[in-house]
Length: 142
Image 1 (cartoon, rainbow, N blue to C red):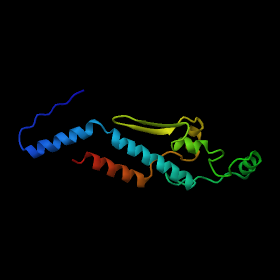
Image 2 (image 1 turned 60 degrees about the vertical axis):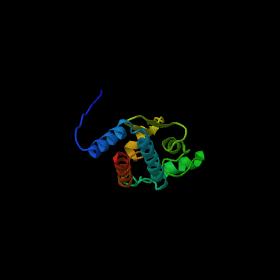
Image 3 (image 1 turned 45 degrees about the vertical axis):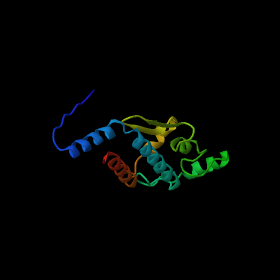
Image 4 (image 1 turned 120 degrees about the horizontal axis):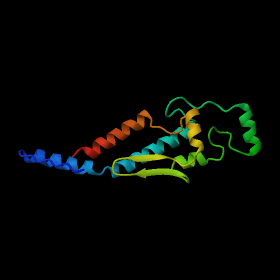
């Protein structure tokens, strides 16, 4: 699709509109930064034991802690082996796709679907949402 705009008038206004169009054609640079912000937020969420995107994660049941101890796994919530966290913050199994108009951040790990229902592992905090809007505003301002 192509959109042409012919403006007659103030050269400064024409220049600003042209610059805005140039910036809007490819958001990939700013979306790459946004993807980084999302991954950083997910990492903070794990460090804090949840709560970055809502309620803190519920504590593990005693039986779960006992089982993890027997198996030599980490007693921390959602960190049995660390692979889910790693895949959500850029490690093996990570999904980070940046296109001209969208960014996708997530994981290929199937278990994440079920964990997200019980404990929010993926999201965007209010603080990060503000950072993202500032980046977009800066990118689109000539």
